[in-house]
Length: 262
Image 1 (cartoon, rainbow, N blue to C red):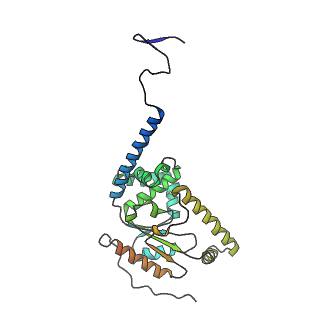
Image 2 (image 1 turned 135 degrees about the vertical axis):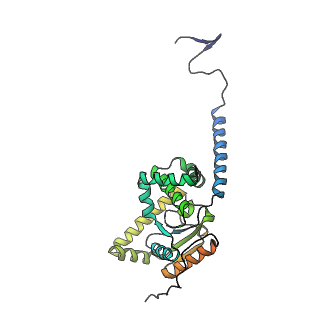
Image 3 (image 1 turned 90 degrees about the vertical axis):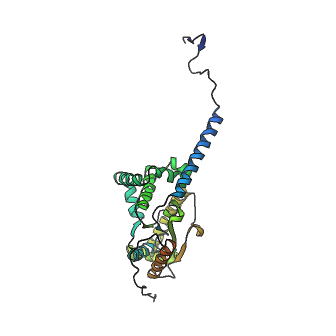
């Protein structure tokens, strides 16, 4: 190997005469800078004033989408369910457009949101998950909507959502799925178990969460006991009260006629 000289000092390739910080010091500096950046993101996140929205959380087969449609009729808000969100996330072209729209209104905030809510996971998310969450923020930033599923109440600023959890017994969930898709009850039961497992896996991977915590929600409604029209009335009333003065909603319909199960 030839000798190289810088002035009168011999230089050996692969070495550098100036003293550099050690790996541990560099790592510590990077962590401090990242935490400071995350704190700045957190402050911007808290100050953001998205239009207020309604977020429904449920397991498959409880009937939350039926309630969402009834609330939409009462309020004039549109419903954005899991299928719509996943269709947007699966289309890079659509997702790119929605993110562009969001960036026009809230420049550079999508990554702030991901870092704030998901921490270090935001750096290793799949393109699909990144598109999904970017689409949620974009839709929420444009107008008040009713989200159904995908943990939207955990992603959006907590003071900008009415978070509602719907529950029902396994028996009624299975019966609803069997009737809706013309399945035998045994097959419907298997579908319910399989979808429940998929949902639990999604929440573990994305949010490090297992079962839903009751304190995450403004309302919890048991659809075995409360009929959908009354559930819609409760949600509508809570939303109007929580965001009184901010909303421009459709006029309230008359009190819905309560139906009694045979």
